[in-house]
Length: 172
Image 1 (cartoon, helix red, strand yellow):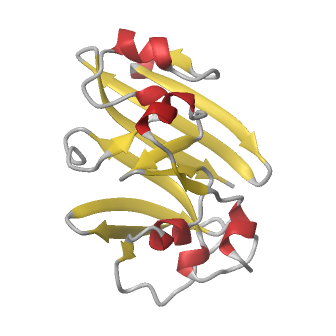
Image 2: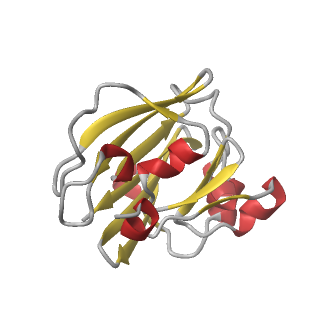
């Protein structure tokens, strides 16, 4: 099965002036905009190299930790199958992707609304796309959306009133 058909994937080149109009389920990594849920193949198609050592397929209900590199940039993801059957790892869907100001400062990443690491919570609240709610217990904004084959959860985390991380989770 084609990876884009299995996970409703889309990616495109979007200028930074257009990123403020990105929906909550989008992220721009190294100049390419991705929409969740997304297939691992989308990263590969845009120059990311999947680390070796994955002779096994992506399985439904199971997550495999998979790293990607692009030059000096590194991403760690979890990959699963949302098709109900095993698929080659590159056709699996990214089920978890996290960015941390501590570990990912070198990755050119733009979050919805042009939110960036170090931005104040007040600034982030002004540009958050519709659908985010604040969770005081976790000091984060959370977005949840039911998709055709699972649920997307996005969390923007704060510390000392600054954006320090964002995570994208997709559970089928």
